[in-house]
Image (tube, rainbow, N blue to C red; front, side, top):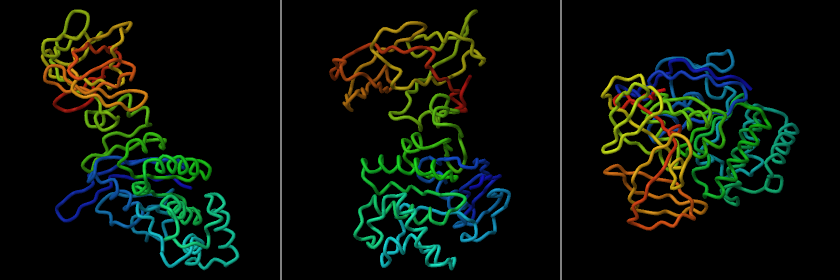
Length: 359
């Protein structure tokens, strides 16, 4: 187990810069997820930590040791890949114990280590099977077992659940997180699935175009997104955004949203006439009357998506598209014109030009 400290890490392929000076500190025993759209650099960053990609600039420290020029096999890091990367001609036991054979550990110790990890993962009855005789979930457990048996200081996961069906993904993410907690090993997990990141992580690193946009706990990045990119990336359905013009009164600030004026119930330290973006999460919109400072938006319904406990209702206010997560018991029909309500306290404000959050 160890800390991972990354300082001004850069990666270029010729003239193309992929990572632009990444700074990140990961604590001993922490589970950190790297999330972002395809091409944001999250898998490249993971592979650089593993030693599978060269470093163009900056440093990576494992514990107190700089590992920039350390070969992958000597970094004391284990990686679980998206495609499992199992040897098809080896049994489960042979796959799990292969790295120990390379270390020339005694056969009796290898058997014991493999059996212990197999018991941990529920694979005791599959040790003599070959990968082709296993389900996707079982193959993923074997890949994890091969990593665990090495007792590394850090686990790296590169989208390990993307080949599994939805139900098995939920089961496996619970198992991975529970297992990591029991072992206490530092884990870095790459995923494009924000639900995996939100449910599994101690902290989330949100990346965009080779840069870190925000680092924080799942609650922090959801409740206080640092900018418009994070606000729209985290959350499903995405945060609603409306653009307005700021005005000040003697007591507070107001935002003009087309024909509507919204009192923000506080003073916003931005110049009169600034163009701001208002964000509101779909679950904070309701048809029910609310107490306290509130605002309302006229809403014309275009599409209703029942999801079980609630419905995602898509529509528009003026020319702006919105989505609201409403109770499935609300009687709604396409074309209905309703009034959505929200509390002012649930508003997020961003500078439209820079995208930065306004406090």
